[in-house]
Image: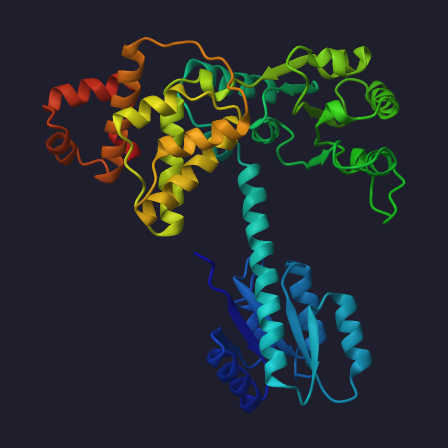
Length: 442
């Protein structure tokens, strides 16, 4: 659900602030009024969940001083200033200081509503982006996104924790859709550079001249080159295989000049190269050896066993909550099909399948099997997969079934025992076997 945004109205004239409040309330806004800037500052902090509408001319702290205080504590807070007739120069100065926009008295109420809508949309985006950046800088939070209990995922988490503490550059390789960008964020978040900047750029998204300007300068807009912006932190180069040879040489020079430890840590991500070639073959050998001192190879989804069912369950529950409906119940046959699918698009493909399965379930039509068939036909020839013993399929389904039931009953052991017709001891043994803990569901 969208975050509710408040409109704080600051005006020393009671009639004016009440009329603005009533009009915006009729337009669907949650409003709060203040008779002075000093009073408003007691409530409006750096993470204020809303926007501000303020008069410029007020006794005590005037609107300009109020605006400067607000911008000093949160430059991303939209402030709409109300000016008197003929105060356009003052309004222009307010915009220079950081005001979102201004209205000149007497103003059209519909214009006020329009500006309030734009301001709240901008505020919501700012707060969401801050929350995302905070999440991506929180090592414990981002590591929880690496879902799975397969040996391959256990090794990956261990590698991230080990390599995250180092200063050396890292090369991440793996099939498309395996989560390489998430791993890059995790490497930054769990290491000593977590409080510094994480700057990412796709080498495939820009022409050679544009990429050169963005990385090394001079940028057309006068902004810092990314290699400088990331100084002290991490520069993530996605699609490193698409970087032209001349820029590879220039990057190598920068790396050599930085010394040890490097001022800027580079995490390079390779998103695709021909199956019969190595990453070493698509990069300059000298650059490959500098970047590839530490490497992480992400496992394809098809090799991760019961992780597939864990991921599908978690994703379908998230989408079901988002769309306000029930998650699809996976049958034994569908569980086997999920486990046996080639997954050429890896986790990214699984995300799409889970969302479409939830939408199908909401309509009461379709099946997971039909979605898998359509996806694999569109992907072309299937990737070869090794067979698994029947025991592995049975255990994967059993784990998923207990996990789903525990989630639905919020950790109620008695309810799970009754639904699955299991004695307490057997349920405890199976939960221990599959690493399931009641505390995770309560």
